[in-house]
Image (cartoon, rainbow, N blue to C red; front, side, top):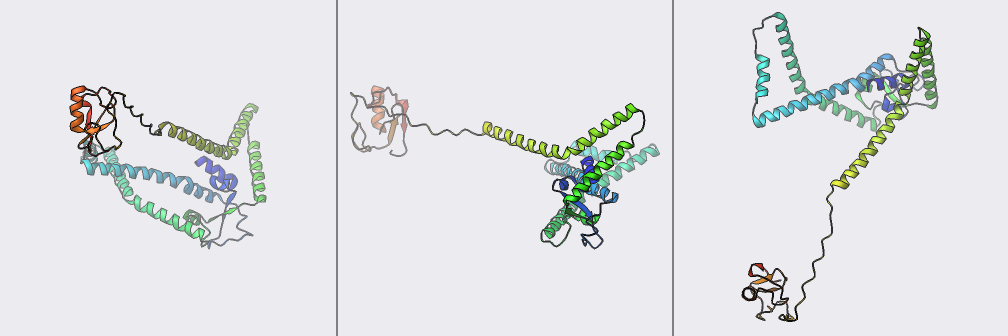
Length: 325
């Protein structure tokens, strides 16, 4: 990112993301007033490029490191609060406070450096939530004011550097391309040494320039390809891991009544054996027909079959029902 942003600032006076949308960074005066005749056509200085690199790459890198350090320290604190201080914590504490009588001055300086480093790290860990909240709050306030057209800067960094982001005109884009070509021609003219060395340097410079020129297009294409592969594999994974929902199978057909079996009453609430309203209903598991429990238990114990379908049924295949179906 450092190389990419430095090249973009050097060639287009904009960050990589700003150059994708045809934007340019232009200096403004101290009061933040924009002068379309003077300031917008002024190129940014080397100081602006260095400060832009600091805010675009340096500070985000330090913030990511501080975020990782804070999260690891928070996990250690939560682990210690849940499980108590372990041997690793005790070992760290012993290493910090052991050997208070150093053998040599170099060892004493080293111990003092480690102590100072640990104190500084603890201080930064404690201050990081406040720093992070302040930075996020300022960013949100600047973006809100920028949307309300109350300021010309959408980030605090732009106001600190005295830069304004504006859209480049077609003439500026053409001038930038010609300036890049002239700068590269001067680089080729500065090549010195034997002819073979010059040829090698020329090929290396052309390769580097081509890589930087196509970095923007290549990055966009790679991001698009990555997103497409992510969508493809995510959809494929969902198809593989998603639970397959099948429709409920239809119930099996009821066994037909046998010709020599007892007939079924017209009222389904009547027991086919005693021809009275069912009490304590129970069904035969092999056939599915429901009878009074005393009636079917006696019949199955004596004949070992269903009285309607004549399908074999033992007494242990009788199931009590808790409601009359």
